[in-house]
Amino acid sequence: MGLSLRREDFSALPGWADDRPAAAFAAFRRSAGFATTSKSYRPGSLGLTHEDFGPAYAAALAEPVSESGYPSDAQARAFFETWFRPVVIGPDESAGFVTGYYEPEVEVEVSERAESGYRFPFLRKPSNLVKVPDPDNPPAGIPAGYAFMLDDSTCCPDRKAIESGAFEGRGLEIAWARSRADVFFAHVQGCARLRFPDGRVERITYAAKSGHPFTGIGGLLVKRGEIPVEEISMASIRQWLAAHPDQGDGLMWENRSFIFFESAAVENDYLGPVAAAKVPLEPGRSLAVDKRIHTFGTPIFVSAPGLQDFDETRPFARLMIAQDTGTAIVGPARGDLFAGCGFKAGEMAGSIKAAARFVILAPAGSETARRAGYER
Picture 1: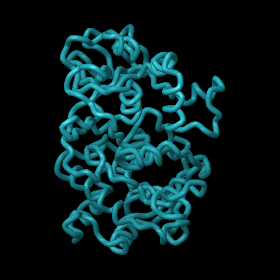
Picture 2: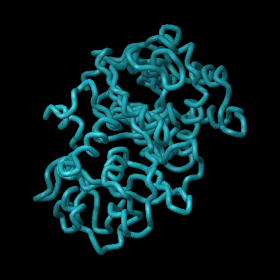
Picture 3: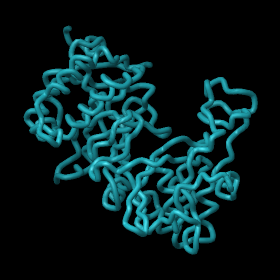
């Protein structure tokens, strides 16, 4: 992998003593519950295994907490300092980068039927869309790297073809929105909350994708001189789309990737959707990582001096839990911070683009901790 591992004491982590990690503990405890009762997480190339996490999982599940599932911050800090050891990932510690994501809530009403004003559907996964068994060695005719294909071993239609009716008439529609941009940004985030005219709220989460490569339209707008790089954000992209209705569809179609959803209950208004690690995301504490490298459930201390903390007027320095992934999240020190749900979280997430330093917390006694210089 070309990565070096180096120990670093908790006392040397900038911002560790000021962090309030109770919510990080709650997030870790949810992963512990899933991994011990449902299915263990697949190890990433850093080598952290289910067996490595076993003692910490057991301790987290045995830890006395309030009915809400949250301990005190002091209790949470003591837990992580007892069961984990900070490990800096090299060789270039300054090469990390974070962005943000959130769970959109479609503020305009959606409808269960295609009717006047409601024209843009959220679609379920087609029954004939299947995973490519080995994306690096796909069937003839399927480009390398595609994660999904049709069951006849042909490529799934791309965004333009689907939105032009490729799957029309198959009953895949979950609901219809007023704005194609609302649907598009739900695709970018991989989840959304839909509000119906009767006040009912439903959650939709990622089920599958077309398999075509993702293209960020913000980068296209910057490259074409439409929006200055220092002004690019989710809000500025939305403003551009609203101001250029004759060009908006064409721009969004340049992102050929298309997301299919499934319905899910909103059991807790505060928590986010169930994501790749199969537990609900914790606002401000769940982190999307490169799952080829990191094992889900790993605590990672992220410090970004150029980014303000979500809740405090100080630089960002937070313990996060690896609980999600994404195709754009590549590398050992690349992450996506889950900002929460709704409009304010979206504003926050859209402005997160910062250099960051990643320090993983390796379970005490693990081979990864030993390689970093800790004794067993």
